[in-house]
Image (tube, rainbow, N blue to C red; front, top):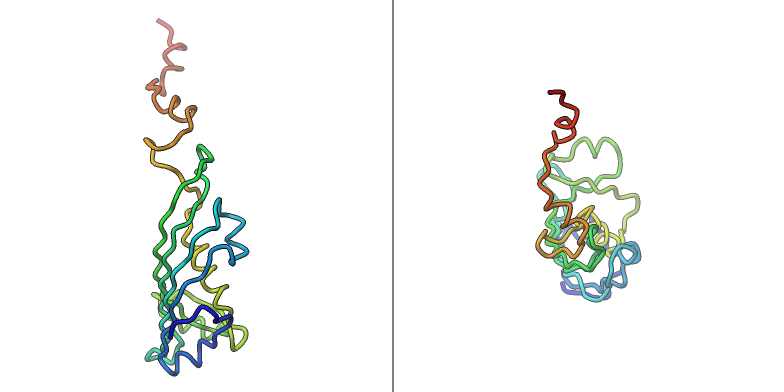
Length: 165
């Protein structure tokens, strides 16, 4: 099933039917992500496969692909980051179900029968974004950082001055 209009999904129902949902979503429609991005143009491609595993746990296999523009934390200039995030989400609604999840599942608490598809995509993107995005050293435009990086002073030079002959 390919859809751009899906707002909410029922993971349990989709898993029982072994459904597959894929499509794309505009980055500017993801409100929490918008606050982090330098440029909100572009789209995220998503693919979700729903199934019930051998332990009767609802599982969502996700794949999110996007190119996001963030600020380099050294020079504050835009940096393009390619995101490819694959996850296996295990649905739980109480602590017993949480304990039953396999170790390779990322837990996803389901309080209601439906979940927002946008929120699920946005959560996965937020988890994939680096905490401190940085250009490579040769691409960064922060001259203070580059000047300090080229200084080859010994960390013991202060002790050298204190040394008594």
